[in-house]
Amino acid sequence: MRPYPGHFLPREKRIFNYRLSRGRRVIENAFGILSSRWRIYRRTIIASESTVVAIVKATVCLHNFLINNGEKLGQEHKYIAASTVDHENEAGELVHGDWRSEHGNNVLPIGRMGSNMYAKNAQTMRQNLLRYFLNEGAIQFQENK
Image (cartoon, rainbow, N blue to C red; front, side):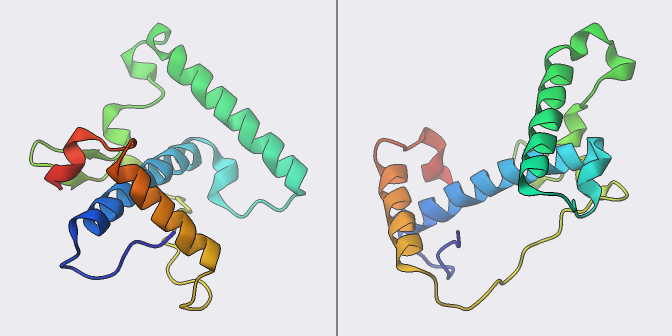
């Protein structure tokens, strides 16, 4: 999904772009951590769709197991250090996690794909999300950005 273009956007579009970027950051972090820990994600997976689904499920289960049981291993064997993931500093600025600079990381920016015209259902979905972020899905700090 694309953010609204421009710099001087009305409040609702600015909030949508902020919330979209936070969601994208969570997804990039999750995949970045998986690819930094599980080498299968460091290259194109050539397999059937069902095999890829099984690989993703297996690595996510192992990932969650290691996170939930990591305290038993001690600090020197900790699965994920705090510096591994992206986070915001006290000033609200993005600090990139270590996973972004690890060798073999295959997470590349997507950039432009296809034409500049997007489907009507994508436009409708963006409008629905915008309304949700401004109403029942609103969070306190979205107004601060």
